[in-house]
Amino acid sequence: MKMLIRILDFIKTGKFGPVEIGMSKAKVLEVLGPPDDDTDLDGPGSILLYAWYELFFDPDGILKSIQNDNYNPKDTGTYFFENEKFSIDPWFLNEVQEQNIESISRLLSDNGIKFEIVDYYGRNVLKVNSGVIVDFDEDENENGIKELIGVRYWP
Image (tube, rainbow, N blue to C red; front, side, top):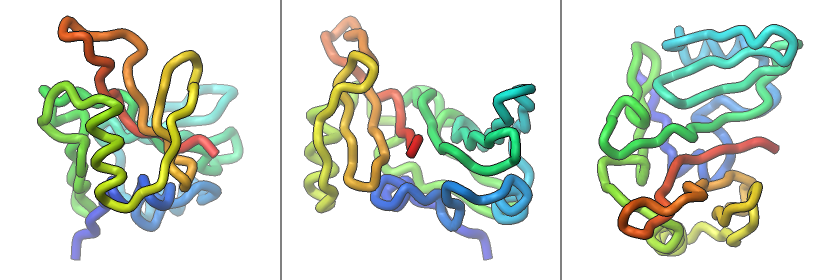
């Protein structure tokens, strides 16, 4: 049976389904199947891409971070993924446009997820108790909104 990876669970736990920080690249590939792309970064390691869900590995092939910071509500390819092993329930990474820190804060609160607003490289983000960051654009769009750009976990 195909596994369902829920972004809601990722935000709560920092785990991408059964995949967690510290796993070997070989084990991740065994669990998730072939990626859309496997990029060697030469010295710093490598990245597996499943749609725009990026799994970063150090030079020893150990998973160091998981993120999707390419979210675009107009492009389902930035948040939806499915292969023979798993599919993703993207939760708020969906077609809803102009999601911002206020709307996502309400959604997290409504789901009992504790978080704080923190400065992250000069912009406000939501840091969940799991350590996952819900990230927003530093620049306002034409409607004055700093839009959601994705989620990341870099422990």
